[in-house]
Every structure is written in structure tokens, then in C-alpha cells.
Image (tube, rainbow over all chains, first blue to last red; front, side, top):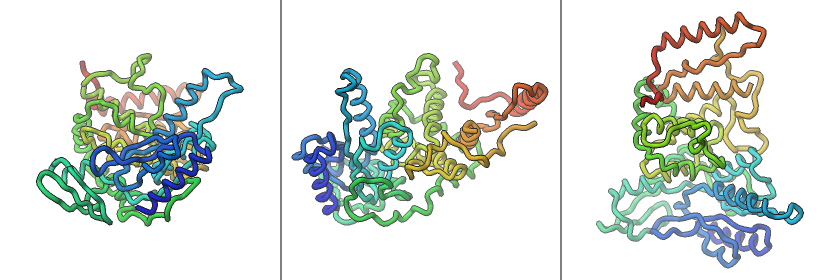
Length: 336
Length: 61
């Protein structure tokens, strides 16, 4: 990790000095112990604040899309002959590169507008799981050595195994190494232990009777307070105007009606068919702890089972819902 | 053909969350197939009647 961090800083500095990127998106140490937060760097000297560790949570592809689309919007006020492209560098793990590939497939920006610094990933810490292990005690100090977290709380010192607090999506991740990169920092990481049981939770849920599945769905959605943090954090949610905010027509009511919340969640989830890269950003930002992943993973599984597609796994694949094959699944078509 | 993919995943996902996926019915009818159109609609109403009123994802004011 130390080594990767050092190389990452060198690479970032070099890219900025050589003006190959105008801005660089990475992670810096957070203000609280054992956290990291996204940061934006334009000055080569600032590259030393970059970090890479098990607390880097958010999918940075979201910010790449934001930066480029904002820049393009601003360029509309510039004479066409004077318009410039903005090149964004990004520190990307496996899921982040999948999101970038997805953006490229969906023609959100050009390949020349993004420089990818690939980093190997061994999973990140789920803050909610860590809080549960510590019974919600405030973390005063903490450090990570090897696979052990040493945490100092008001109640004393506690040792936590990293493997016990890894995020669920990281445990079963099959794409922990970048699928696309310009510069690779460090050696590719070995596969995650649970990669073979990727769909185990979905398969177990599928076997439940429909009423229990519906009860689980309504129970989870009743926690939702419609803060839209999941949408804001999701790299695949980049519409300029979300269907939730549209008024002509109004697809879903505002307010706290339970059905509206279910419909909002259902529609947002369904927009992720073959587009969810399972980065866990939505789950990690959710203040209410809604189990979104149970449903997102099903959409990923369907896209894989029906169309053999893994979101953003290759630049050559078209998005699954914008293409078709002759012998796609069709046993559901109604033929009286 | 792209619609076929969309409906395949939509029905599967509706079933997954416990809503009757059979309420979403998908088929192709040509403009010249009047009789087929009538048959499909008869079949759809029969199917929906068999399922009874929808209670899930329905907003009541």
C-alpha cells in the first residue's frame, strides 16, 4: 500500500507537470480518522496529499463526468474556434474503470479526455460495518497495519480484522483490477476470496416466496427518506434532469408517500440494468442503510444471464439495452 | 428487438421484488393483424382479471 501510494503521487505529479491532465481526481485523507475523501488537484505540488488505502470509498468516475460536462457547458460561451478540451486524470480501481468504460460506451466523453491511473484494489472498509463492530462508538484514532485495524475509542483500544469490515460488494468483487488504464501503479491484486459466490445472496433471495420478497422490498424502501444521495453518488446516474424532478410529465410524486418512494427506487434501480458496476457508492452514502445492493445485484445477474454482459467490462461491447441478438430470451412474449 | 431485452429484464425484476411480472405483457402485432390484435387484448384482459386488482406499487390518495 505504502509503495503504491508513493508511485501514485509520482505519477500524478508527472502528469500534472507535463500538462497531460488539467485536473486530477483522487483521494486525500479525510478529516476524521480512518477516512478518505475525494480531492481535486490542479497544482503538481499538491500531488503529495493523494492517498490510496482501504478507506477510499467513493467511485470517482462520477466526478470525472461532472468535471467534463461542466467544462463543456462553460465552453458554450466561448467562440467555437477557441474552445478547449479539458483532460481529467483519475485514480481508478476496478469498479471506477468499469464506470469510465460505461461512460465511454455511452459516448459521454472521448477517450482522449480522460487519463486513467489504474490502482489495484483489495476492497474498502464499510463504515457502517465498522460502526456496528464498535457499537457505534466514536473513533478517536485509528491505524491500519497489514490486515488489522487498531481503533482507539472512548471505551478503549480495539483490534478489528480488515476482512470482517470489508464492504459486501468488495468481498465478492471479480473486477478488483482496472479493466482499462493509461498508467498502472503497482502490481495487479490477487482475486477476492468471495468472487465465486458473487450471486449467492441474489439466488437465495430468488428462492423466497413472492410475498416475502415483496415484504422485504417494502421494508427496505420504508427506510428511504428520498435524500437522493444514492443518485448523486452513482456514476451511472448522470442525467441532467432526473425523472424524479421532471414535471411534464410528472413520473413520480414528491413527498413521503410510501408508494412514491417505492416507485422512485424501483425506477432508479431499473435504470441500472447492465449499467451497475457494483461499486457500492450508493450503499456507502445511504444515511438510512437501505439494502440497495440486493436489488442492484439482481439486475447485474439478469444482464449477465440473459445477454452475457458485464457492465463496463470491455470497451468493445455495446451497452446491452441498446443492442440485440437474434436468439435473445423470448419465452415471456405473449402469443395467444 | 431492443424492447424484447428491456421487457425481459423488467419482468424478471418485477418478479424479483415480489410484484406479479405477468401484469407486464409484451408482444408484437402488425398493423394488418386485426384478428390477432383482438385475440391479444382478450387474452390480456382475461389474464389481468385472473390476477385481480393490483395492490402493489399502486398509489392511493
